[in-house]
Image (cartoon, rainbow, N blue to C red; front, side, top):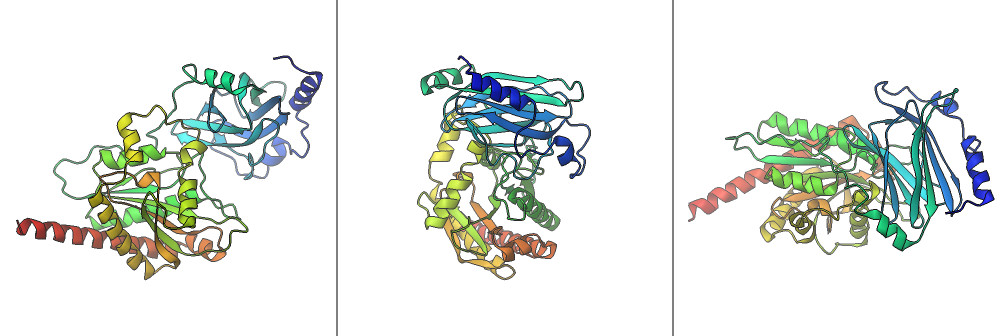
Length: 418
């Protein structure tokens, strides 16, 4: 592709780091706490160019290796890196320039980080390289994107693009203890890593709130001695939705609880309180449909391409849950709403259903809890309260106890009646 004079001027200006409205990396670094020294630190980023040629630059404390590739539908460019610390302002990446509409970054596994650029049209990766730190300038990742047509874009995808990276980072895959009759409960804190989930006006991220709550709930369940508890993640790691489902099935879990927090955008009205969701291919209302659509985009947000997953896994994500499993899920959801209502504010319609991918294991009773709305000041205050978290985790734990006591009793009754 030939470069126009304006393109050359734009890129040269860009390399001089004089983008309008951008503070220097030194100025921004002085306002934030230092990051762990054993990982490279990304401390500045900028985008320049137009809808024909765009350059993306990120500064690092030391040189890193990179691998860049493209994904389609929607058009994205993915940059895989070793694990790094992103020491960048909170709203970095929300808006872009030229071919880049927006970009995200975060941990996708232990030892691996990822940058995902949403692009406005088909692009070609013209250059992708990292410069060493020199002459007082930091190490620098540089990615040049050039506009192309869809046919050329699609031809460049496979087989040259690397297979998608899925991860077991943060995922408990330890084998079940033989001879241990206690049921396995899988706790699934939503989002993580590159996927922040909803973000409160104060900057508090859903992924952090739900992990904190899930760890409290894990401690409550383990302390009872009645269950073996498995966490889909125990740190700020991205776990693809399909791996969360697979985790429950591999471990032959008796119950799967996914934990989230919702938000309403400005102009969409106000809502408060916790909600419990079960699986349905038809959402119970428009709000449930919106939420499921947002949650099911997690793998797109992280740049994960699931087109190469085995057929049996694809079937898990498509087929309806088995009838008995759906009945158990509904039973637990009703128990959960009743127990949570005693200690927590509940939504005016506290029990709903929608097509959440993470609930689609056909043989594991599953629910998704929305603890509240981070867009509500009252809910956010509760979500961040240690006392509220402890009380609510206790109520969820009581619901788990009630669920298994009735299941065991029902199973014994059926056996005695044979």
